[in-house]
Amino acid sequence: MANLTTQIHRLKLQNPVMTASGTFGYGEEFADFVDLNRLGAIIVKGTTSTEREGNPYPRMAETASGMLNSVGLQNKGIDYFIHDIWPRLKKYKIPFIVNVSGSTIEEYVETAEKLNSIEELPAIELNISCPNVKEGGMAFGTSCTAAAKVTKSVRDIYHKTLIVKLSPNVTDITEIARAVEGAGADAVSLINTLLGMAIDANSRKPLLSTITGGLSGPAIKPIALRMVWQVFQAIKIPIIGIGGIMNATDAIEFLLAGASAIEVGTANFIDPTITSKIIDGINDYCERNHFTSVKDLVGALIIPEQTVDMNIS
Amino acid sequence: MPNKFIHDFIVTKNIELNVSHFILELLCPEPLPKINPGQFVEIKVEHSPSTFLRRPFSIHEVNLQNNTIQLLIQKKGEGTRQLSYLKKGDRLNLIYPLGNSFQIVQHEKVLLVGGGCGVAPLLFLARILKENGNEIKILIGAKSKDNILEKEIFERLGKVFITTEDGSEGTRGFVIHHGIWRQTPFMFSKIYTCGPEPMMKAVARLAQIHRVACEVSLEQTMACGLGACLCCVVNTKNGNVCTCTQGPVFLSEELTGWTH
Image 1 (tube, one colour):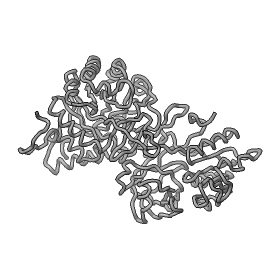
Image 2: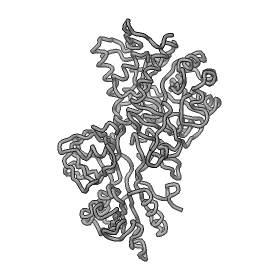
Image 3: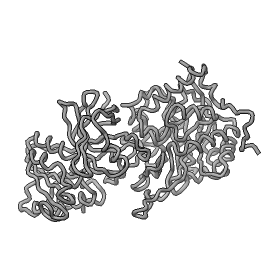
Image 4: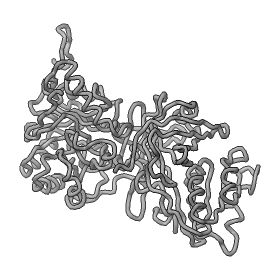
């Protein structure tokens, strides 16, 4: 058995496999399929200061090797989470990380403050990259100034591990990564969904009630890998890799590109047991390739001498 | 104790009903858990690259003695076409049983209304309702005579009425045009329906006029089937809820815009 433990700032994980927000509910939905105590961490559904109804149906469209969603942060609000959901989750021995979303800086701060006071919750993931809400969301993640401002405001009142989830819908993701690092983020997770669109040619209508939505699944993996690699060159804080991870090999590719941990998202919909298989697969890979610790894989990409790195100008 | 499972089932039968419908009989490798009428399964479709997500199918019938379930499937796209090619001995990965179920009344007179492939969950329901001492009548609507599904099987469980859009069998028109709705006094105390949404909405209106409870089985585009992705929501009196966990069966009066 290889040493699979990894660390995101002060947050220690028994392995690098986490579940992406919005794809694993609160974990309980998958308890019949996965021993939740095996997971690195569970990142729960995007949570806002007050209850949100989300967007109208239809919210999902299947696309080539992926899916578009426009759920729009449907959740019952932070107070409901704290009083009605969290007490049920306490029995599990793994970290739960709340994905914090909002439309205004005040809303992010209010939610983060409430979570700061719950000792057993070791980290939050600041969602400045949701493409499916009219106000806030991705708007905070597509400008360096706004990203830094919301990160700094939450940093001032939140004293545990602060992860900022980045949007790929930008010209240069490394600039945003540097901005949130400078504003006090302890780690970044990337990527959130890519803004996309699907049309029904027969009815001549969009397939989503919001016309556009967020693309996820294996279709976005090469983009996510590229962005993790670029951000790894640009910042010093740990990176959590997300984007179309369907199996252990995909997960390992993200580690090699520079991620210290990974999040499994859309794959949970196709195989609810996949997280468990990915943990086993990472261990097998380490043993087969004589890595005693998964940490040795992080950024261990081998760049052959003749390689021309297009990212270096 | 888990109540949802994931297993590779083995195909024991693939019965062609007509040019566009077939029944898959699937053997469970473990003893089947408690399954109730109205529940569904999520299938991983192999050999169909364009079918990325699982597909939900309601359970047509359960045979505990043989440890099999049946699914009634309409060939609609690439995924269901691939499923129609399955042969005895092939494997199929299922997550099951999912969703809520129809409420089973006892010793009442009930009407089941199925449109097209919407009869799929009604066979298992009809059998369980009969076992609970109910008097059952089944109203089946189809485009034409060739598209009436499972009529003979339903006839073993109760009286069957037919409507066809082209009049090739039974009453010409939609299910709502059948004379059974104009009987006075209206003899049913409960209605169960599954079919195209406009049909179910029209049935729900008639149920409301007759002041009878109506349970409808919805089909929404779905990803996880487990209540995690929040894609298959339907708007109800309690806000947006997941069809996969709070449904697929709803009382029509709970659904926004279904009754007046």
